[in-house]
Image (cartoon, rainbow, N blue to C red; front, side):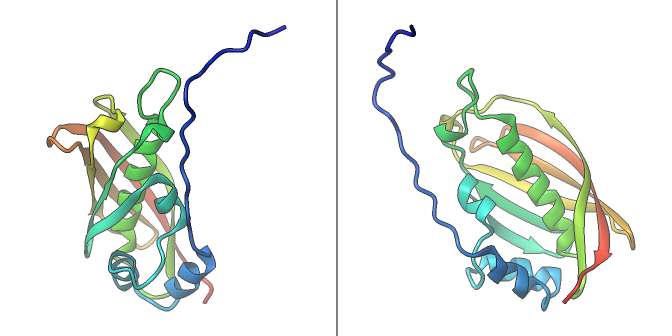
Length: 171
């Protein structure tokens, strides 16, 4: 029989998100740049993953985006650090959104690879992170982008390179 342990006070996190079909439907009528700016400006609801992981777009231009976000203890792994998947999701997002910012109406994308290098551990005390995605090779079928993630002190946390497959989308 297992012993009953006192784990201390529990913590809670409430997440609110909006119907993702609203954003997906709007995407089909806008260029990538228009779409990302609408998300940044709050004219479209954030995708659920951004609400769940607490990050958002700050800057959007053709071929370059900047997102900010702050991991909390709910993203910790068993050794008391922010799980690498949190950073990976942020890096994948900014690289893909940089590519998205170059696309016209009716063109979609999907990530086909992500090569990520973790350079320092994170905790909830690491503060707000700043992630920058930049297209380094636009293409007709495949575009390549980089991502760099810095902590609030400007220390480099992670770097990534991603390829995205471009494809027509149904309207």
